[in-house]
Length: 283
Image (tube, rainbow, N blue to C red; front, side, top):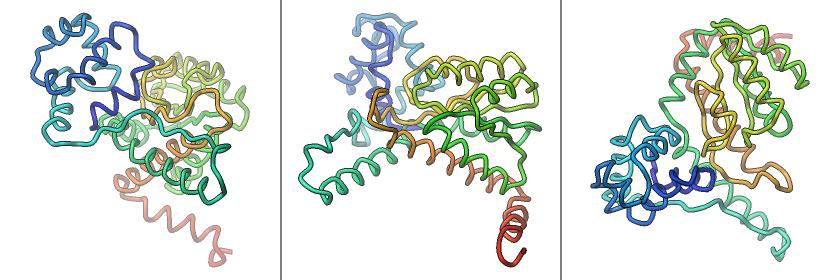
């Protein structure tokens, strides 16, 4: 994970007031903050050391030292900082060419942000859990269901049995039958969809490892999960339709798939076998 100021900007509006004070101070005084102790930072920000610790945890840093290291890379390495989400009003665009250019720019910027907000430690722990699971449940509705479906078919290509019930009630029912050797991946950009929270709760009660694919900044789903694969906070929750959020989740799915291929010695054999099964050669 990298890009401390990117993470802070993404998470800022979701933070508790005491944490927001710390985040705001770091963003406004990065060169000062990088050399401060946790006590000094808390005092300068008008907050508390406990709030600094909570902020580090919320941003998925192991501790204050790791946050400062990430910040130092930006301050001394001149790493560019990306601000808030890229927004544009399509009604103000003059023609389809302009809309095309604006949309492509937004997509490229958003995909770049995925690198900054996705924790490699959470990713590695997720991969370990998936490789050791005897049962995998995928859950998601609406646009998030498209990402869940994509992972479902990709796991099948690797010979990894997973289930993805199309109805949210069935996802909840299936979560109740999981156990300690199971993994439940819940896709929800908002992290507040009631049915997805129920899936996570039931999976947790069953002893399964719960993994959330959701926006960065902390939400109800993140709090219920063992691991969080964060995506950029790129869209308002009330919007004309999921676009950048859907693409971010699909990028995370592709990252998971690529990492699983690299880790599994039988991946090539399964990919070849499944390709032959559905190609003309296999018919």
